Image (cartoon, rainbow, N blue to C red; front, side):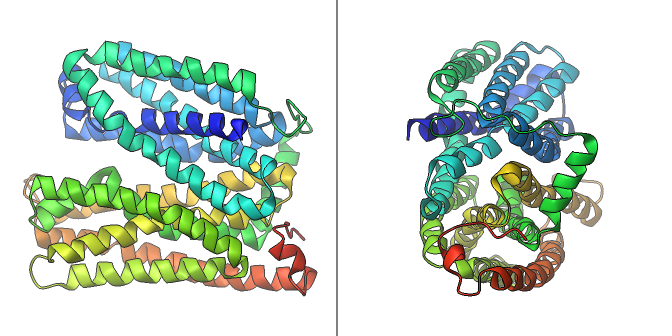
Length: 424
């Protein structure tokens, strides 16, 4: 349990650092003398690096073990936040956020590997969901102390203090975390480029890995897009609610994420065969509510917007069901790399949607980026249907192939229900 707690605390701190700029936008714009576009680039670059690092990090975990990679990630985050604290120019600050994205990318996969090693197979789904829920609370925890620090301590001291927490995490990881019960460090075999390609190809070739990827792709992007950038302007400009109400709606979405995680973890533990069915049902709910909101004549009522953020929030922990699919589809020696493949899905979809929404809004409201209309937002948010269509077709394809493979190798499903992987 101590191993998981320390790993979880490290992941929570990574999310804290990832989200620390959310309440510092105005201060950052003033400090670096930048506009909204350059400010948004901080977040976009950070997330692009995070998504791009998933497969390399997975390979590093398979080779050197989760403890070594997790400590490296904590150290990189500490140095990156320190650099961000001391940056005097926009290029220096942007470089620091690149390394924040790198350090962040080294945490979640490692913690999932520890969960898969230290807990019994039947407990892994719910522990995985708890990991995601508690870790994502770092975004909430970042808001109040960072706001207070920036107001009373200034930019440099606030970010240096937050960076110093990483030193504590590094000490805890070094002292308390072992890669496996009775084993302080696990070292995988050295892999040539051809061996790496073979390993990744084997992970991707398994239909369960692809199913996990498309599950993650289809369930996460709606909530991530709302919380990352476009939720607040959509509610204020598109649905004409007050700024305070928009903030409450986004908070409700975070609470939905935290509440749904343990429930979904328990559900897939009880009925693992129906994991994809549960994901399909959640996607159908998200699509249905978005359709009602976008088709509503005039502004949608507040109760409907509450339903929207709740169902979108449930999509966050639903995306983590994809990791459980990867767990039962890959042997331990390539589990981290398979997790990295799956973890790219939702972030790639989110980044595509975030950029596409901005392009459509600019096209529908030329000449005035501050005057986005409700009609423009309806066009922009309708882009989600393209991503859902692709994701649903792929989920349906690979669900059939994964189930057929499981039944070929485990006709009575006894091994499958016990949580063991089916890889061939």
